[in-house]
Image (cartoon, rainbow, N blue to C red; front, side, top):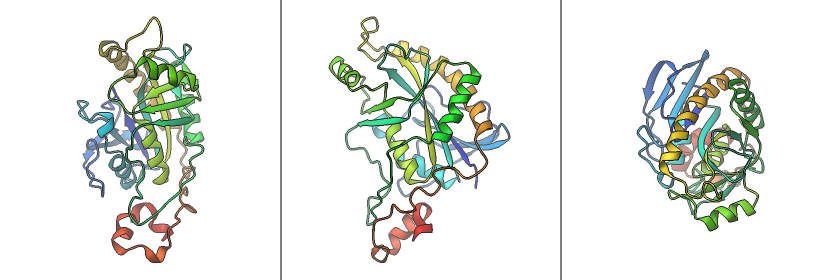
Length: 284
């Protein structure tokens, strides 16, 4: 085991300067390469694996992210908890740029992205009514408040396809649905983390008002980047506090697949048993 805690850095957060004794680890997976090498090091006395979601230099757009490789790589390193940081647009007046949100729900507006590991021979139906780990969300909440960022607890993260920002019609539709923030990455991570029996939570960092707001009727890259840079500084401070507070005991979703494998075990080939061993070997 290299690390029990994983941190995924989104737009603007490509490095964790607070990590000491760091080393880079390249991980091979049945689904190809992750976005970048994992940077493993010590943070607050605990071993942490950090991954830049879009790669250092922001080289991978949201639609092309290899979510399966990214999460499987964390699992392979021994990660049991993933705290994800993600830039988002706000769909509500009270959620202002530079505010942080810890959502408790997701809604999928993507278009056929791979979002399960089990696409060959094995069928798994995992419970996902509550996609966020409440324990980790509590930790993130407390860390945000300790750092001093404005924090909103709960809400719905709408995951859109991108890489273009919303049209005005789309933005108004998402608001009419009652969604709170909109981003392009976190739903697939949350689903795959649950299938990997990793407890997952997101800290969504507001950069803009999408395009619905009459005073902010166009999302500009210049504005987003300016807020990304400020949010990234806060994000690292939040990560440090959160890592210190993550419990040492078993993560809440460590047995999420206990009753989720539907396929008759006798029909699963040796090839697929080997492919899925890290994920469901203990149930076969």
